Each structure stands twice: as C-alpha cells, then as structure tokens.
Length: 141
Length: 143
Image 1 (cartoon, rainbow over the protein chains, first blue to last red):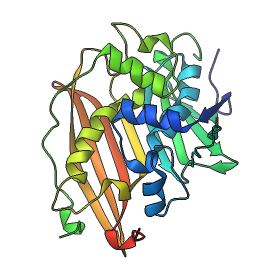
Image 2 (cartoon, rainbow over the protein chains, first blue to last red; image 1 turned 45 degrees about the vertical axis):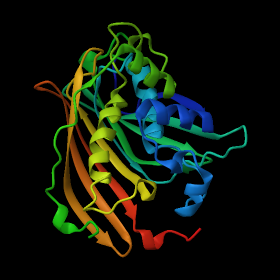
Image 3 (cartoon, each protein chain N blue to C red; image 1 turned 120 degrees about the vertical axis):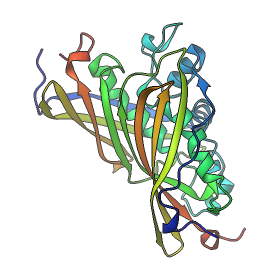
C-alpha cells in the first residue's frame, strides 16, 4: 500500500486518570507536583492537576507508531503544549482524542500532522512527526 | 540573581551514564499505554519519547542551578522537538547534555529555550529542544 498526502490514520481515544499521571511520573522521572498535587496546581494558578505535556505527546505519537508498525520508523517529533490537559480526581479523568493525517511525502519520508483534543479543545499545537517509510515494518509502506 | 538573558550559552556537564534496562523500557511503555511487543523482552527498543528519562536528569541540572533561581513547581513545558538518530535499546548507556540557548524575561515570566543532546557512548541518539515557561515567586498566590 502506498502512502499519499491526505491519508488519514486511525483515530485513537485514550482516557487519562490521576493513576496514569502517577505511573508516568514514576516511569519518566518527572515529579513536578503540578502533575499530582491539587495544592501545588492551585498555588501556581492552574485550573487543576494537569497531565505531563510529555505524556500527552507520547500518547499522541501512538497513532503514528501504530500506523507505521513500530517506533523505529519515527525520525522526528515536534509539538507545542497549547492548552493543559486537566485531569480531575473524579474516577473518570480526561479523554484525549488523537487524529492524524499525512501532510507530505518526500524522499521516502512521510510527514504526519497530529491533532490532539481534550473536551473539544486542541491541547497540542503544530504537532507533527516524520516517518521513514523505508523503516516501516509491514504496515504503512 | 534570577535567570536572565545573560545565561544564554550556559551548558552543563553530561549526565552520569544511565544504563537502559529492558525492564525500564517496558515500564515506560506501560506508562504511555503502548502495548507493542517490540518494547518487551531482552532485545527491547524504547518508545521514541523514552529519551525524556535522561532528559529530566539533564534539565534538573538547570532547574536546580542556584544561580538561576528556578522552582520546578513553577515551570510549565511549552514545546518540545525531537530528532531521533536511532532507537534507544536495552543495554544502551545514555547520557544527556543540556545547553541554555535563549532566555526571554517578560514581566514575572521567564521563557527558557534549551537544547539537549542524548548519546550512547560516542553515538548520537537524539537531538532535542524544549521551551519552558517559569513564573517567578512573586506571581505565586500566597497560601
């Protein structure tokens, strides 16, 4: 199968809870208290405990690695953290919806534009990944 | 002295070599909900953003630098760029070197641009750049 600009990747919907933030803090080593403590989040003026930007970014990239058949094909990845993902301690958490579209294909590299939204608001800006189509395992290329 | 434009160009020593275990890769994959079997077992490769594990060690040198007067809880990640040269593998010994590229002071906010080189021995693994927003103490609501 060939990869063309305009190709849409399968959408990913993920629920993020406080437990996920604690697990990511431990796995990544990012123990900034704004990602687990209401007290500190409030003190620095945030609307509540927020997800690590890098957790949102890592989760969003799963759309690309699922499509590319693995992590090894990803050559670059860029995003702006435009809006915090507030994760309430209510047993439900936040829902992240990730959509992605191939925006360009050149010299065997596909550029994928990624849109991540939470409660209908964009949480990542200018998010894009470059995928080496020659390194794609089975799936996309 | 708080952080200022004059700190642009400051670089920190490479972080202590971090031995990557297959167990840590699987733990990180679990934490981001990634189920790909390539991230499990003795020959595991890491998810691309795994490099944050060593990036934090490098960023902490900057965040904890007493001359800059930063506080982690008042730092928010603004943007992040990665260029991956090759996947991280179990058995790699990673080190990260951080450099402050640019500092902008806007009222009580500091905008810090920092670049990062992640290596395994002599081999480049990832080149990254990040922007952090830091609010000065005066901006923090008194408890």
